[in-house]
Length: 488
Image 1: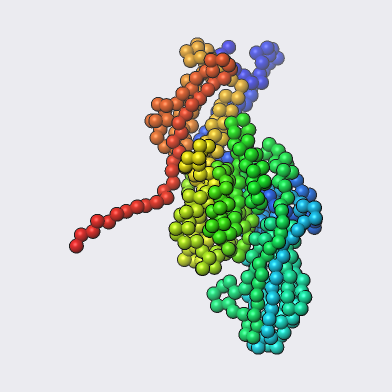
Image 2: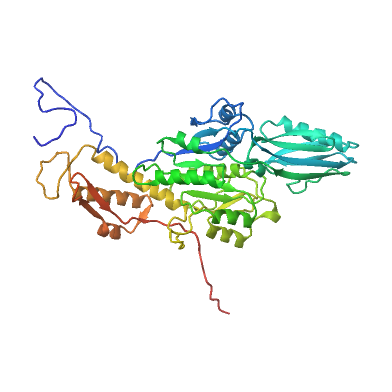
């Protein structure tokens, strides 16, 4: 007998025909990778889903019900779904800390309105228009502002009024509330009605963040390919970094990329980035923009993961961040600032002719190796995503083709049809897979790969195959430089 069966033994005597199915040769070409995105964030007590419980989200209204209207997490999910409604999206809520310290801000109105107009208030990037009529006093207008803010339950703040002053209070505690932007007259042509002035004191005073340890424990061994994280304090980033590095390793192999954003000036953003060196984190610096950074992180992840899931090696440059408003013209990064950010471990963006936020280059926060020497090996997110896919393709190919095979040396004379594998068979399979990856535009330099590929049987464990390969990843077309030597 030369054919190996999986379920039909060679001791059968009862007639007639027995037919089994074997799917080991059924799949050809590179496999489809099932990507899962997990969004972390704070829930409100009005939410129906408890903290520490991953839940799939398919619709915005589901997110609102699950985590409470106006919660950080529900707004992150709604922003993600507006930019990318097609991903396999999950959410994992955290509860606020005990006795939270919430950030607050103030809107102060002075004067009496002399001509009817509209106050163009913007809270966390959301328009909150307030009508002021002729002869409205500052106190009347302040009450109108508070009423308008409280009427929109999706806003991250609530409002109270005292005389001519409106106090805004974040719905949750912690430093993330300090990043909620409040301003008037963002769009061109907007002005405050005549006779009054509206002064805004930004949100401040929030203290601390919840510890993400509970969320990390809830991750289990599920493969989350992307994690959106709103917390940028050192403790939480260290905890996530340790977990992500464990997942990246050769044993767990459930790697993920963490998407964060940071609000601040150029100097503040650079100082933050230079304190990190994480190849599994990508951070976009928002500057002083209308939307808070947790929304930027969610939208950046939504837009990039959609594209990278189609092709992990194709650059995400020029993609627009759906629904994100750019900073005011005076606050936008200049070219030299964007270029410096790309050396500091921060991604970069520009504002295109349509006024949309457009990605320049999305990079990781990895800058130097363990000897503090500049190391661009993990610079781009496309590198991380391509490596992740190649490993997945190799695992899929080997486990699909040889799930229950015996192992022998090359030259062993076994019968045709035997469930037997040798180093040369593995080598041939890897070379075939490389050509398929090459056809998919993920790798290059086939001859070098083939000549350097080592597949050998372990000298100490005869049940083990060891492989060393040099996979030359394709690069991204980033820069075109051209010198014109003109003639007159």
